[in-house]
Structure formats: C-alpha cells, structure tokens
Image 1 (tube, rainbow, N blue to C red):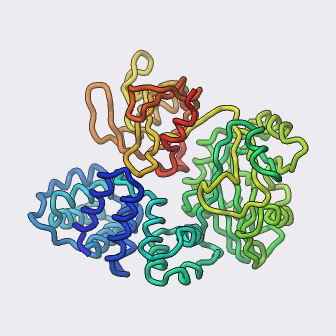
Image 2 (image 1 turned 90 degrees about the vertical axis):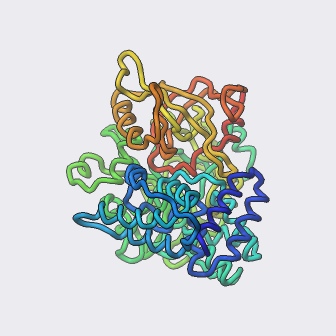
Image 3 (image 1 turned 45 degrees about the horizontal axis):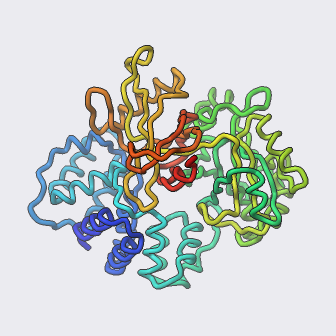
Length: 502
C-alpha cells in the first residue's frame, strides 16, 4: 500500500464529522492493507507511529527544508522501516544520522505526504481516527462484533496488534487474547456523577471508596518477577523500587493489581500530584529516599493462576482483600454510611469518592457508568492550545492559557476558554519553559503550541457563549495541576464541558 492512500484517507476523515463515514473510510482502507503493513496503517491513522516516540523533535523536522517529490512513490512499509531506523539510532552523532534518514524520507514524499508525516511525527495529526472509531472500523473490516475487538484491545494494549488478529483471523483470533502476566491491560475508567445521591441511585449494590489524588498504577507479579505500569501502559519498574519490593512480598504467587500510588507527607496527607509524578521519571537515590511512594489497590484482575476480569466486582474485591492487606484503598465500605466516607476522604486531603457497582465486570475505558466519581469541586482535563505573555509581576512568563476540549469525533481540540488563575511562581516558570519547547508559531502576545499538555481545570460550570467555537465558555476557571499521566486523547470532550452548563 502506498503512503498516498493513507494520506488520502486521512484527508477524508478530516473532511467529515460523521462517525459512520469515518468508519466506512477506515474499514475500506484496512481491508486493502496487507498483513505486514496493517499495523503501520492503523498506527498512522490513529496519530502515532508504530515506534511511538522516535527521538526527534519539531525543530529537527522543521529544519529539514526538503523539496517535495512531484509524484507519490513511498509505500507504507518503506516509511515504517525508515522510522524504525530513526528510532533505533543512538550514540555519538545520532542526531545527525536521524536527520539524514528523515531528509531522505521527506525528499521522496509529495507535499501532501510531507505535511502528513510532519504532523504524524510531531503528534499533531488530528484527522478524526480516534481509538474508538478505529475499533469500530477494524470490526467492520473483519466482520466481527465491536465488543470482541474492544476486549482484545484491552488485553493486548495495542490496537495495531489487535487489528492484525481481527482481520487475519476473525473472532476466533480475537478470542485467543488472554490476560498475560507482564503485559499491561488498558485500564477501566470512571464517569463523573453530579452528586453522591445520584451515584448511589444508579446501582442497587455498590462499594464506596476514596478517590485518591495520586497516580494510577497497574502491577504484575509472576513469582519473584514484578512489573509496574502507568495508566498509559508505560513501564516504570526501574523507577519505583519500593513498590516492586512491596508487591514481591504480598502473600501470593502471581497477581495483577489495579490501584493508585502517591507520596505522603509526614502527617500522612497526600503530597502535590506533581511530586508523585516526578518519581516516575527519576532513579536518583536521594529523590527516592525523600519521596517514598505508598500504593493503594482497588482491584484484583488475576490471582494465583485465576483470571478475574469477567468476575463481578464483589468477587474481585474478595480476592483483593486476601492479598492487599494494609494497602487496600481507604473506604471500601458497602453502605450504610457512604456520606461519612465522602467527608472522611475530603478531610484526609483526597478528591472525593468512587461509587462502583458490585455486579460489574472489568472493561477498559469509560464504558457505561459502572464506576462513578464524586468530587465536590468540578474539574475538567483540558488541552493547552496557546498561552499569552503576562503583565506586571508576570512579565516574562507565559501566563494566560488557551484551553481546548477534545473533539469526540477526532478533530482538533475545540477552544472553550482561557485562564491565568491558580498558577504559582514555580508553575509559571515551568509552564513558560515547557510551552516554548512546544511552540509552533507566535505573534506579539501569544505563543501557539502543539496540543500535547493536559491540564486539570477547576471551574464553576460553563455558560453559553459565541466567543469560542464550541458554543460554550468556562466559568471562573483556574488551574489545579498539569496531568503528565494523561495524553491529549484522554482529555475531556466538548460534550463533557457542555454537560456542566448552568
């Protein structure tokens, strides 16, 4: 398959908001792809190379300055091989060698293909093929139920691998995916509830537990081997030695646990989220000693050879209690006193509570409302689109943030407001440095950036407004924290912003 075919499909996706049309375009293209090139086709059209980050940045690509080819000749396989070479190049002189490989690649690309590759490699490809749309397209191309693809994707953690199985082997091949120790699963997520009463009314039998202000982790143990993953399935085993030792000492032979981890103060209260996240990128002994992480587990997906994904939560809870001990998430009470748990969670410095249906199975993503989160303070995770230079004591700092909500149809983020509130001096300095690294262009007052940073915003709902493209504007928005554990594809949608309308 030629890269031009993928680029043409990408243009079709960007030109329509119809989910049905997007699925039709994608499934037709996937049906034509060969088994060897199918993973790259799926990866490219969901906005990332098969290699993930390839070790080159926006400035390197912008500096290639290569004249486009007159006619298309690049195949998908050739592009994937070139990116393999770029990603595997390391050592002295590697930056120059990577640039040479990319320059050769771009020289063979037409103007449209160059634009596509540039956006693909900088994370700016927003043509509408989000994972949910691609799952349905894979199902259509393979003539299998979407739920079968979705479950296999949860177990594999990789959509290209799932697509190859579905299109090459159908429902039988998808059914062969099993929970594998050492291979992370895509996590189950919670939906927001307006109040505790609303959440309790949705299910006949629930468990209520603290909603911790920590970082999501998934731990796998097989004998003495332990691996730890983030919510984005990135392995951090080498950075969290104390968690590894703790899990290795649990009373079991094998286990997969879902939970959160956080750094605590001497008084036992949660430290700022950024301090917890700083451990995920550090192996420095002094930082490890200063910021020991404490895990709290809230789900058990496997125990001593038995997979529990399809067991109801009440059975998973029973298994969890046998191994988690003091590391069980606080709360974990089945009524009578859920309101007391909410008060206690807030008093202990946490965000609120989770209300979970005891008859629910584990399903990746935000599927239905089996898990509900209740927070007194309403927040949204939004994408930073730009920032304006500050005035007064903020002169020299990028301050006023332009905020975008995710387009559920896969288009570019939709601007919904601005805020400069809630920014400490330390956060202003970090924010300015990071945003300048992500700059795409600027004018006298505003720096536009690649939409890569997710920031948590506290707000008093939204209001109807013609000022922004989404038709709504945030009310009294302020920055709570940045979310380095989340990707832009996990930001809240424009629909979720509209749901807060006063």
